[in-house]
Image (cartoon, rainbow, N blue to C red; front, top):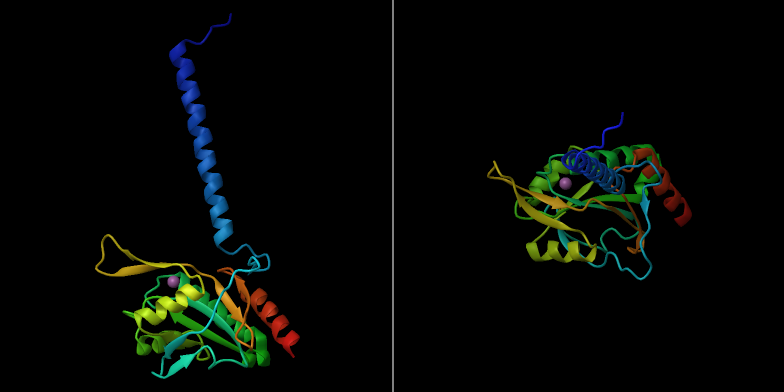
Amino acid sequence: MRRTPSLPVLFVLLAALLAIALAAGIAWMRLNTRSASSADGTGGEIAVATGIQIGGPYSLIAQDGSRVTDETFQGKFQLIFFGFTFCPDVCPTELAQIAAAMERMGPDAQKVQPIFITVDPERDTPEAMGEYVRHFDPRIIGLTGSREEIDQVISAYRVFARKVQEPNSSQYVMDHSTFLYLLGPDGEFVTMYRYGTEPDELAKSLKGYVDAAG
Ligand code: NI
């Protein structure tokens, strides 16, 4: 004997199905966002559409208090990462990866200058920057500057950065984009890497560019 489900039962079933579909949809979207924004172990380089200008002149203050410009490091490849010293996990992870890639490059590393530029110049003094980068690799140079100078370089590299007030803390954090930029010995933009690119992969790619430049 077959019982026809009553209207309320059908409605409940339909609502349950809808909820499942919705949950699956959300899970799918989360998965996709995650794979687009973090390590996926495939190359690490990000294609940049032609005609999109990335980089340009900058004038900032190094950890020793000296003024440096984009021309200071020309002749070497510049590997530039933007972040801030209070960063709870993204920046330390990336700087550790850069340090590991530098190790793996051996003597070729001499042709690459890793640079960490703060997006939080209010707290990141030259001293704070120096103290911070030293923990990862003494070859990394930390750069800060006035709010205007930092805004200028952030905009030139199309970096996204904004202050976020933590609900239960007097401190703010910076929400920021996490790409790693490579400039050639002429100071021109070469490529960019996604956050989480494995040190082996990064070192291999950097060595490729260094070798190609002779
Ligand atoms: Ni960070």
